[in-house]
Image (tube, rainbow, N blue to C red; front, side, top):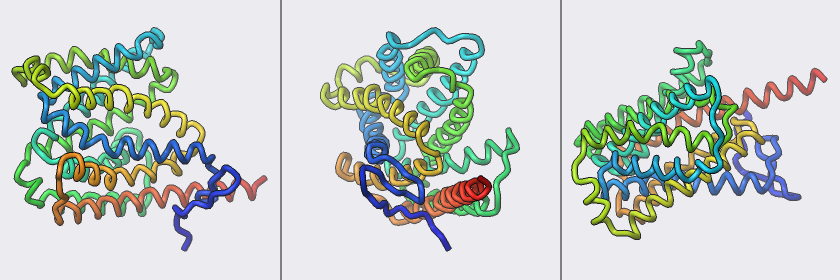
Length: 317
């Protein structure tokens, strides 16, 4: 049986990856994205230990919106509605629940739970667009949800059910927000980042006023280096990586870049250990391993289907 060859053959400035040629530059960018996004969970956890979760969102949205506003253009027509949907479901729904989850559970537990977002996305597309999927993908989804059930029984997760529920709601909103992102392909990245962030500011501001107190005092009391690091990481580095990711997915098939994102949980766990002193509990790790196995089945099947279609297209020429 042919499996995905993650061992890459490097030669002549190019990398042969599963019979697809990826430039060395793209491969290096992909590794940098995995590192940056992998460390994001412990960085977010550090942020919510300094200031209230939703108020941190307000600062992130406002900073990102203002940073890219000079480079943005005015959206036209239906772009306004498409961007507003992303702002509501991805920026607010996803990120606010994610930060609220990290107030109650460890970043390691969060990393394990949030991986279920990919199966959520597949099920959402099937429910809304009737996008079919085969037996292999169904098996991958089933294995992933078995891992989720196992992880829920771990003491560090079961002791904070609301935190776990927030994480799953964040994953669900990530799936919905990603679904609506498909309607924003005509919008350039500075406009996308600025518009969705600024649209999300009033919603997040209202939420923090309802849910939290002492926000200004918390920001003033926080260690300037720590809160500065968190904000620069989220506003600057994470936004920059969005530009890089868009370029990678434009130049390369998604089937070949998406599997690399499965390395994020390992990087996040290592980052949580060194940054926050967190240990991964055995049952949580076992649940995460099952979820990753399910995702591997899904991604490998997609790559094999892509290779098969490519061979058939080549034979037909």
